[in-house]
Image 1 (cartoon, rainbow, N blue to C red):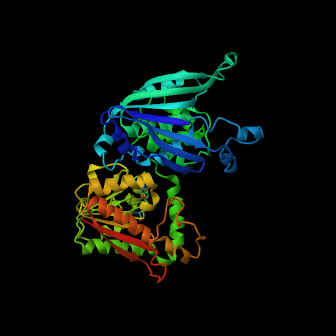
Image 2 (cartoon, helix red, strand yellow):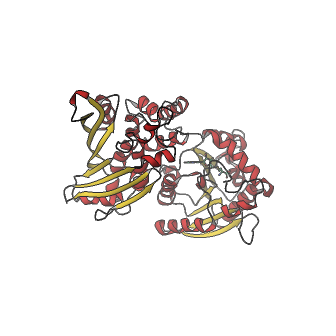
Image 3 (cartoon, rainbow, N blue to C red):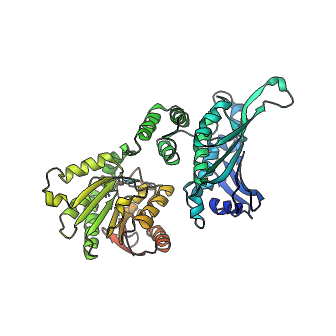
Length: 466
Ligand code: SAH
């Protein structure tokens, strides 16, 4: 299975910077379903092609139960088209191998990453049972010139007729990030099979990679339904999120999980200690205008309102429901006008640059980062430290080393089902070091809650200053 991407804008070899893969080398990656290799068959100043070769292991697929279901016939599990065609395996490989590029980031060519450039992509074998017109219907509204070539089932036996396989070439002036996102979403839509069970996080992935184009696509309904393999409740959720992009997922599971987390941590009254520590750091630093990012149900906001020092308090969250609860908790409809001037609740996402977050003395991000998967964490880093750039940032996150001390938490489990990670103290410091280095901040660290000599405290806090 081969995907090639060609850049026609001189110096075309800058494609290597955009993909974060040096054109001079062969790059190989182990994936759960096989191997991926990236190499450059052509490198000229006016044309440079990168190839992603996917080597899917059919026996490994059966072992990992990712291949076609076995009931229909055992042979089908081992002998099938998966190793040879573009499918959702390609999407997984793109996300893994070109994760930085699909996130729109480039260390040394950011401006180029942000620019539409003449690119083409060629997918050597793409299965599409609905036929050729469907391929055109999906890619042409996105501005591509689409060329398709249908393959016969077997060249030696033309009487057998045509196969459902096509070679597809897409050409456009487009940002590389968009090209990769389009391929990421639309290849599994064209292919009828999906190699893994479609879970709730697939909706998030679809929203993330469909951002900026899917909502306006004339065939968005069929794209969403086929991408989610006709799991109706997921498709409905995705379509309603697309219909109103200002209302991203309020994260239905969040509330229930948050209660579990409170129960695990409650013997320590940890959340009270956490808020107390955040408020005292802000007070000691002379902060007046403060943001609470991912403010949830507004516990910290309520503490901040108690302190006259804070003249402007802004809470932001992606979840409407949490903001409603926060508004009730703060009795927003009852507070006197003078007090009301001090506080605002904003609906917004930390994934997007937001002018409303600029110009503050400090931002608090309390128990939020562990909810962000790697591409979201990366987006958040730039939104906060590069764009909003408050003078101080106070971040808290669980210290996973302490989890052994929670009697009700099974070994190896996180405190909250939605946590994407929980870091050791070293991991948090290592992450903080990348932040200070990239964005010109310094960092210091505090512990929150009872300190254990070997595993530290339950919550860790980083205070970033510039
Ligand atoms: N800071 C609060 C809530 C922590 S729970 C407290 O300490 O009580 C994590 C919060 O982050 C949730 O309210 C969730 O809705 C919010 N969140 C998650 N992803 C977000 C995003 N991308 N943008 C803004 N808020 C987000």
